[in-house]
Length: 355
Image (cartoon, rainbow, N blue to C red; front, side):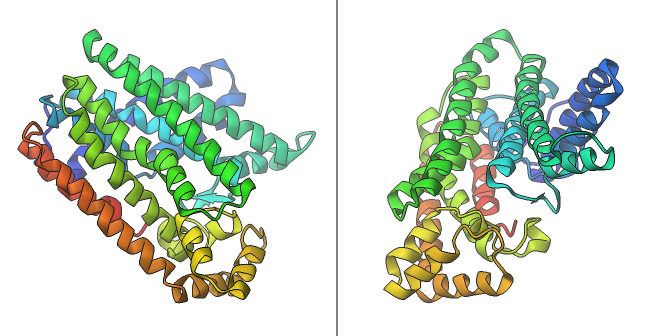
């Protein structure tokens, strides 16, 4: 069966979900055959992967594939779906690094396994057990990503073209995650440095590299045009995430209100706020940023400073400008018309989302 971009996001997302479900069911059966102790691992990874997720990265990879002349079939859907497992690895590890209690409205993986330890009256530290388990589940998701790609059914030539992009994407993701951790420790107040984190932690691996991955699977064409679209849109995507991390509705984001403030995230939004704040406002923001027990009243206080300094409006204008840059790159005559239309829609989805 062939799939098209003209049918829209939802049917394509359903095909990606079906591919992921079939893969994780096969792999979970093997885990369970090793021993009953691994049942919670299989169940947790399946639930985390299948029950939610917007599938941005596979969708962009599918657009990159079609836009470079590929025809979507079961094998290519399997291949583009595989990079969702890289994202799963990143999310699980990110929650450990940020000490986040929730993800998508449910307990984060490390908190889930901490509770398993407690419920079964196991020995040692429940917290450490949860962290260790989450690290291993994230590692397993990364292994599964490679396995899903290898077993996707695409040709050897397609795999050989895609491997360098796939490897680079994972390297950049890990580099971006480290930059994020380092900037928090550095207590950076630089918009430029925070934007670099946004580019590598999320932007490149969310949009540019998935587009490159899809293009490599198909023919290897359009890499420059996809970078022209993917890099600025990826940054806009992360800037929207930064705004949602402070102002988002918990019922939609699945995270407590102001969670990025509790985690001490050194985002462009925070850098812009500190740059525009009075001495007293700057001191107050710095005193509250990274405070684990930050109350809703204190969250609202920081929000008020962000808004009154014009930092939120500044970031919104950056999103608008970056999105415009991205859309201009779609003028390339080598990208197929159906992919252009799809990517126009995805730019809206990525930058105007509520979660």
